[in-house]
Image (cartoon, one colour):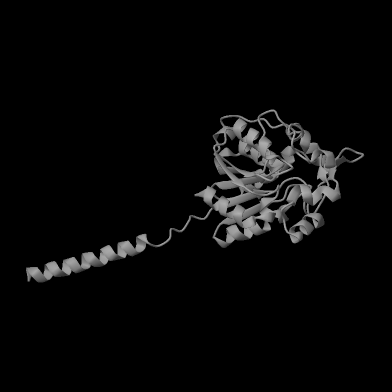
Length: 270
């Protein structure tokens, strides 16, 4: 009888052991995250469409913030400022449950930096994608003019009322998406709007207690001619960002290599 019971126990234990082994071989399912994506200058939410679809297909929540004066928003240009942009993003973040991964591209780097100063406790990671990273007291105009290798400056045209900046149409796609498909380039041209200029002069005020407390990551665009790789490296070093992921793309990787960007954002979240 004792031998029979012992055999039964051994069999049961073997079943549990095999069950454990099977479970350990199963792929780990990543926890769903909430991403807030912020576009850059002369662009709009459409640029994130493919990245958003990728992230959502893997169970993540994605919110693409439309900055005032961009896309379908027609706030008068004289009413726009960096704080107006920031308020929009902070409002989006504040309405979400839990923390978010906040992602900013180009000029959007100024916005997400300012937002991180306002609501640091709501941001699990701050991700810059070929973006400006200001120090306290800096503005976008000052930063952009400090990049000696940028090809953007000579192609800008200030409006007569000084409220908007245009990029010469013949240079637009070469600057922003030189490595993209013709379809992507056509999309950029079709959605182009002049950029409000007032926010370029607005300075950020940052503190170690708020902005400094947020974990930061940089996705470096190594073929970029709008924000040169050398200048990106300089900003990364000045901000003390340790996690850097290079992508071999132009200024708009979410249009030329969206799957690379979405895969990186998922990796960064883990």
